Length: 510
Image 1 (tube, rainbow, N blue to C red):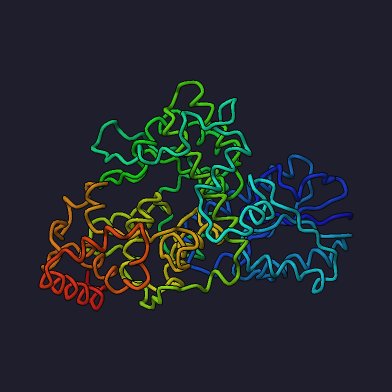
Image 2: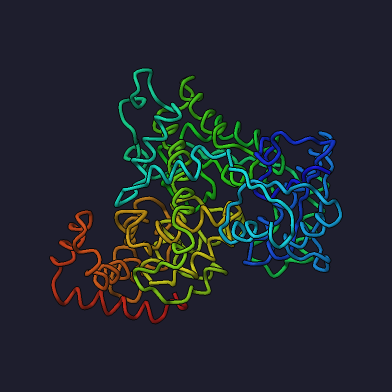
């Protein structure tokens, strides 16, 4: 045998660099469901189902294309419990000339694979992941010499590089780079939200559901009502469904939250892009073509493209540029443990309950729920970054270390001191009231800051600003916040801080 080709669970793409120039008659593919990767964090049951089923379907597709595939299905008593053990056994069995793989999405695993040539006594070739718009080296060159890295400037460079939503004379479509200010409408029930895309589980998926329920019953979340795509063809159908039914309104309502709707107008394509069933190029192309056809407005197409071409590429580049030191940052000195209700949803704060309950049921919540509800509360409460980062990695079906860590540690928790974002994403209950209807159903009163029934976000917001004044008072983007705080009467500030102290001492009771 010439080459042993390793394909990981988030590399389910037939155009994967590891498969390029491969010869099905001389090379062999290895894939494995291993205990270590399935259990190193409390992965949502739907995430395990999605990946195991998608991996099995992908292996079958490779076999139909003529490839020889060594596949280890999961069992707790497998002889080989780690990826390295699986590969080592295949190397011993087949004696390949070399092992080929595509660079992975986690620093921990990447560092291990880079040692395999010594430990396994085989040549190892790690190829770039060409599914991204920007290579690690491209991002590093862009970042070199910059004191601060700002997604907006990187995004503009990527627009120029790709030509996405660019005019013939080299300017941005519509004359603006960013239409975020147009994308902040509150949803009041009209237009009606489309039904989410659904796939009925086939035999393979049903077998995986039974496996996960048998061996991962203690993991977070529910396997009920599993409906995610598990093949490329199904994922392409999900993309078409989004373009036709949700993208036209996505721009206007992308920051909205609803007490009645889990999905609203969001694409829910990130699970498929991040595991390889869809490519970011084809997804962005589909949105841009819909705009060119007049099917969707520009603010919808641009807002969607920015999430992928902008944030997704930016956080991936930042991750590989700064690891492993980035994972240890805690510039605000936060040490409180994550409240247990993050795992149960048992809290009287309606917005938190709804976001966590949707996460438990679906393995998904959209970016504002993650950033401005569960994330905002963790920031204001001073939760240890490691705790909240592990939670985000565990509970979402689209979460992988390269995308989760910068978004959580940097954007949500501001634990990098502003390296990723110029100011913390902190907000009081007024923001949640403005963007949702949760407050109408809540035990707490959003208009109150100091009573026993006052919305916890209000006092925690001012308490956060007050206790971190040394870090933020000099930030021009926060001048107005501190001016508003200083304008309040001393006795009111004292009452708010006292309420904040009580809340911080009783987080588990909220």
